[in-house]
Image (tube, rainbow, N blue to C red; front, side, top):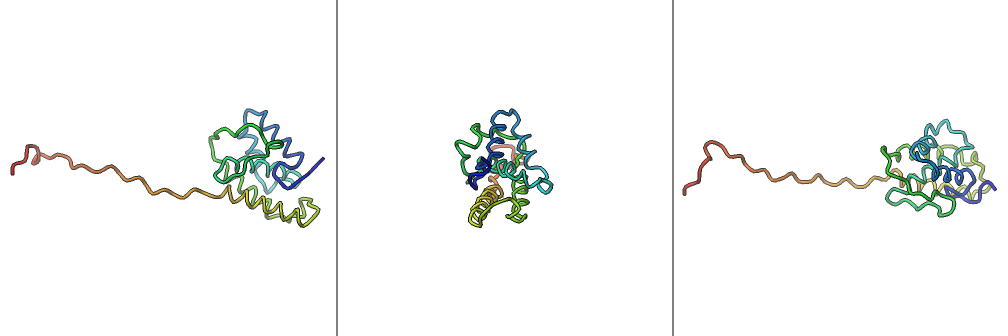
Amino acid sequence: MGTWGTGPFDNDLAADYALVLDRSGVPEVLLRHALSEPGSTRIENWEVTVAAAAVIASSCPGGEPLHPVYGPHQPLPPLPHDPRDLAAAALATILTRPPQSYGWVSEQLVTRWLSSLAQLHGVLTARPPQLPPAPSPACRPTQTAFDSGPRRR
């Protein structure tokens, strides 16, 4: 069937990738592989790169839930390393290439696709505001030799 929409899982390659993620015991390896060296990624594989970025973004604050039919059905387990920067860099590389090189047939589809990629990129690059450091415990003066007895008034 090929591609039926502009969403991250609206094509055969991305839907197949979602199945592999569900069946794999090592989602981090599959995610990193799909996102590594996006500059050298062949244009034919952009669908998998976008799908991997969408999986990561879905677990971020503000991230969209994954497609209930074509996306992975298993939640992403906690990963030992945060892959958001890698996913954001991969999407940035895709966004720098001419959109026509990805095979979209109409300007309207290109606009929708670029908008969804920009939204994904925004979720991946957003960081929660830094909380102020917790106040240190109140310092209690230590007792010295001069202070070692009861006080007289």
